[in-house]
Length: 187
Ligand code: S3P
Image (tube, rainbow, N blue to C red):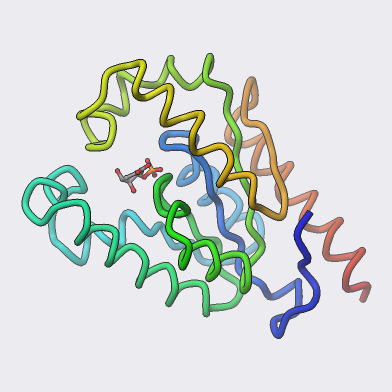
């Protein structure tokens, strides 16, 4: 586990960043965790869509992935400076080194893990809104899924979402955060 405590920001005030492959449930779970911890929620994909005034699929078509990634990086870097937020970032964002540094150096990073077997059942409902999936066949998507695992392994805490509801995952996150806060920063 990476170090959470040699930081300028006290552990209890650090924002929580949720990472993981597309469609793992970062937004749904992030909203629930935010409610349970009385924090506000930032969904980076929604912020990007608001900024460009169009869907992610359209941003990729009109402006290209590079423009999307640049704004994504800036938005995450700025959001990671804030305290007491719950932040959900897109599945590809963590592939950028500057994003990893901003998240890992300032926030508590939780990786939501899903098995390939369970994830592939979600493909049909994801494909229309995920341009990264539209340009690949199923074998290429599986390769991308496995290739990204090494980077997602850079986290402070990992949690499997397999066979768990969003509510159960959110409760588990809240419990483990409270345990970590009590350990590292007893009242
Ligand atoms: C992407 C994931 C998406 C979104 C964009 C690119 C990726 O976010 O940022 O379509 O490269 O994995 P979700 O992880 O919320 O689906």
